[in-house]
Image 1 (tube, helix red, strand yellow):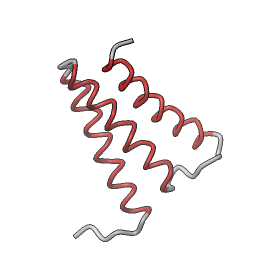
Image 2 (cartoon, rainbow, N blue to C red):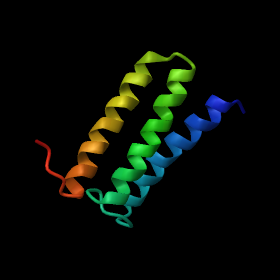
Image 3 (cartoon, rainbow, N blue to C red):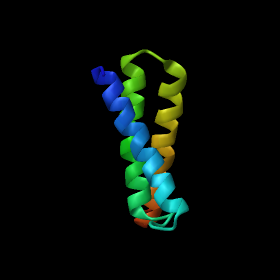
Length: 81
């Protein structure tokens, strides 16, 4: 397994684990841990996609990460002005 495969696998794995845990109601889908797992997972998946120059997934994962950061800020009740 190459470096970018490992990074991408960890990133996508984190996103899927977060989704599974939220689906099973083991964590809240609007909770901090859900969003943190998505921010880190999407960030890693974005980086891995960048390493292989696959721009559709760079854009997808960067957007996923930004939306998750927004959700985390809301969960932490940080004002967005």
